[in-house]
Structure formats: structure tokens, C-alpha cells
Length: 443
Image 1 (cartoon, rainbow, N blue to C red):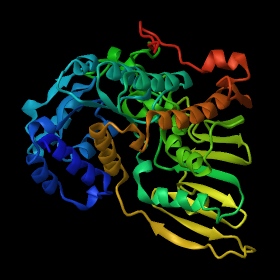
Image 2 (cartoon, rainbow, N blue to C red; image 1 turned 180 degrees about the vertical axis):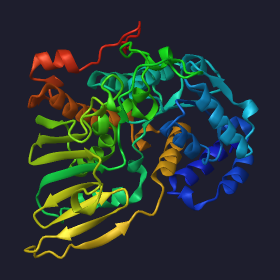
Image 3 (tube, helix red, strand yellow; image 1 turned 90 degrees about the vertical axis):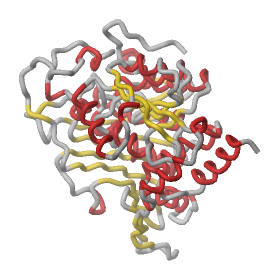
Image 4 (cartoon, rainbow, N blue to C red; image 1 turned 180 degrees about the horizontal axis):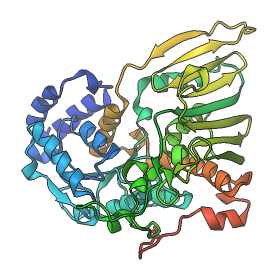
């Protein structure tokens, strides 16, 4: 057996065997990594390294054989900060190339895979261009910023035959899988309602401030990309881009794709028949935001209803939890969130199915990266925990909720034609208009 085949076999056993990386110190990974031949290592580049993009870099570097060889960000201060952090961990940053334009990073021949951690409005273009450049991709959620973008991203993965993992890392966490297995065992009885809630007391938009010049070292034109040209405003930048329709979709596409994903998985659900979203800027009308800080959306599926309930500035969510999914059945209710899961039995139920709260015991992001690297090496895309198809599915459902809210209409979806029954809504909302000379590639 060749050395490369031996490595692939050994690493597939390690990566596919449910290794809990959080239980193993980084020094152990370093020792393992040093034993891997250079030809068998995986070189990655990271595009957008201020938030989850950087969290992904740190998770990736725990995986044996993964090397960071390039970073890209439109904010030079962010690049400087990250290189300093790497140096503090005794990583030789002289070997890491830096870029302000992602297209130059994609031209770097020794990069095997890229992380996309930019604001949402850039995800589709960079993912498609990365696939064209022959790179595998780990793209943050929501994978696309419109329904058409999601559809095009799926087509690009299929055309270019790349490995593309969506950043819904909860799909790699064992307790989520265990909870879904229980839901699908039938023990809850007929499930008529699934409630999904996200109450985030710490999230608060920025105050309204005057437009200003971009900070030194920020390429604001590159940051805008295909979005509408507007003067720089500090309240729309970095983390707070998510409260503006040009760049994202508020809590619905931020946390919603994580939580709605497991609601859909548990119910083996496709797309809803009708969508009715209502809410507004009720918590912080004086602050700088466009997306609703309070939103309730009703999704109608065959045989059950799905309710999305979100609020900024409040932590007291359903069942005493600030976020979660509740599968409400005739015999009991299963409550699931990032911390663990439990089953609350119905008083009149004859089946004894009550289960105390079972805490999560693993690191979902680390395991999601183990899964991605394993599939990059094996090329068995069916083993991905969150394929681009899965990411596009839940992102589409989240976009539907936002479109109903923005239009003020209860909407019906034609699953055969893959569009709303209201043509005016399709024309206005299925695809966000691109600006500044950018266009979504035809794949």
C-alpha cells in the first residue's frame, strides 16, 4: 500500500470514527501532523476572518494535516490581528500569504480548499468562483442570500464536482442526531406542531450614526461587492451587517438556519405549502436596523405546522430556554437545543417516555471540520454532514419567511414550479439585484 493510500486509510478511520477533538489537546494534533508527509497535507485559505470565518480556521487547524496558507479580508487590521494571534501560538506566519481580494487567493495554486466567512451577500459569488477554480469549499451559513442564489450554488457544486460543506455545524453534534432519532422513532405520537424559537437578549443593533469615511485599511468598495452602493456607515459594518437587507436577513437567516434545519430534519420535511410572517422593529425602533427584531412566522406543511418565533433583547424563551426546537406530539414533547435535549411526557399519556435533560458532550464545530476534511480526502460527498443541497434547503425556507414578512402577505409556494404562486413576489424577491458590475454566474 502506498504511503498516500495508507494515510488516507488511517485518516479516514480517525476522522470518521467519531473522534471528539475537544478532548484532545492541540499538542497531540501537532505531533500527529508532523508525521504526515507534505504531499498528504491539506492546504486551506480563509476568506473573511473576522467572526465565524476565524472560528472555522481555528477548528480546521485542529485537524491533522491541515495547513493555513492564505488569508483574505477587506480590513487590514483584522488580518494583522489574526497573524498576531497565530504568532502567539508559535505558528510561522511568514508562510501565510495575505490578500484583500479573494480572486487573488483563488489563483494561489497550492490551496486545496477555502473557508468563506464573509457577510452573507458574498457567499454565493465566492463559492461559485472557488468551485470554478477547482477548490473545495466550507461556506458559512446561510449558504445563500436569496432563493435563486441557493439554487445556483447547488448547480455549481454539481457542475464542478467539488466538496462543499455548509456551516451548519449542529449536524455534526451527536445529541442533535440522538434527539432526531427519538423523534422519528414514533414514541412522541402524532406530531402536529413544531415550535422553533430564538430569543437573544444580548443581541442589540448599533445606534444610528452619521455616514463617515471607512476606517483606515478597509477596502469598503470590495466589502460592498454586489450590494447597493451606499456611503460607509459604522452601524452597518462588521457584525452588524446582519440587520440590513442588502447583506443578510436578520435572526431568521442568522440563527434560523441552524434551528429550522433540525425542525425540518426531524419531520423529514421538504418545503412549506404556505408561509405567513409577521413582526417588526418592536424592541429597538430607535436603533440602526432594517430586519425585524421580533418575528413570528407560520409555515404550513402536510400534516403539521411549524412556528418560528424570534426576539432580540429577551432571553426568556419557551421551556425556560433562550433557543430551541420543540416537537409537540400526542404522547409528549421533545425539547432540543445546543445544550442538550429532554422529553416532557403528556399527563394523560399511557406510554412512559419521559427523559431527563441530557447534556451535549461534544464540540459540533470541531466534528464538522473533521467530517469536511474526511470527505475532501475520500471524495464521497454523500458522507457530508451538511451538503450544499442541505444548506440550500433550509436557507430557502428561511428566505421564504423573510419574504412573507417583507411583503406583508401570506404566501403560497408551488413546489413543482419552485416559486411562489404570486408572480409579483417572485419578480421582487426570488433574487436580489446585483450592483457595481457584478452578476450571478449562469451555471
